[in-house]
Image 1 (cartoon, one colour):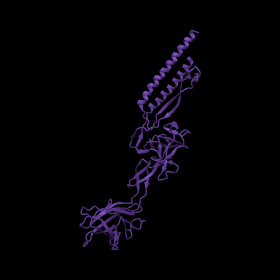
Image 2 (cartoon, one colour; image 1 turned 45 degrees about the horizontal axis):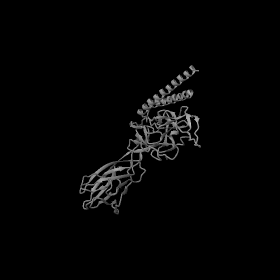
Image 3 (tube, rainbow, N blue to C red; image 1 turned 120 degrees about the horizontal axis):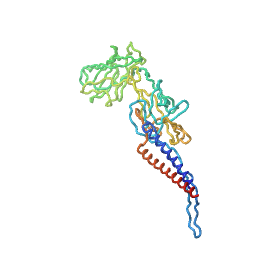
Length: 421
């Protein structure tokens, strides 16, 4: 019997040492971004049956079985994948997962999974983890239903210029006012600035009627201009091009220039469209007694632009902002979910790989099919609960000492047995 207690105490010392080792590793990684706390699960070792249970019989009551345990053993090492606290870093390459899921990274032919979003750009502009693993996703506007691949964001990236085709007008023409001009800048097919002058002239004998003429370096875009007629409430009622038939305005109106576009520029368009939004909508053209504010509210042309900055959105979309004010989708980060994340194998370096217990990865975009969303410019901190770990450390130390007491007591009993033999 003393030998059983010695073996049980020895197993207890071993399991408590494993517990202390695990706690030590958790505490050491309390400041490791993306670290997931590990927890040890124990179970008892097969017991020694002393007496079986028996049913009742004539004159005798039933008896319970009796057994003695043979110690403890490590049953499982579980990873706690609850989300850690998220802190803003302001670094555009950083990303934190809000909810479930793992970033997908590759090293050679191997694919791994991590919660650590401490990424950077290598010399080729490829998004990579701190250990060199390449972050996976979908480049540009590639369909997110296809296979994933590397994400590259070259610092020298540019977008080609776009020729102006549509000018959206907006603002107020002062009722009863005098003729006035406004200016704007368009762009030709090579991104060259095209100076546009808009002249508004009131009709001399008819109230609420104005003529708009557009010109580039003195070359008119209309033969005699566009006649704009407003109703008694100050809303655009109709228009006529170059003295032609009046066109009633029932919604947004798109008026194409009637003259050849001026020489000295590179054009692929045949005309410029002047778009007047529907009455009473945002930026619609009105005629009130208030000050003159009419002009080009927006246009669809721009010059060449260089990548100025970029950011990661909640859905994993990487959006680039260019020096010409345009934005463009540069790619989308992928996230993977597992039916049993606890079945992933921990490889160190904050990376995991699949096993038969974890199931196959369910890869898709952040925010879809139960996957968490992303917070760009932020990192997930370690989810280690230091207070809990230090409390567990005290308990493990106490259990360890108690097991050594059992060893000491068993030794005393064995010495007494030898002495009295």
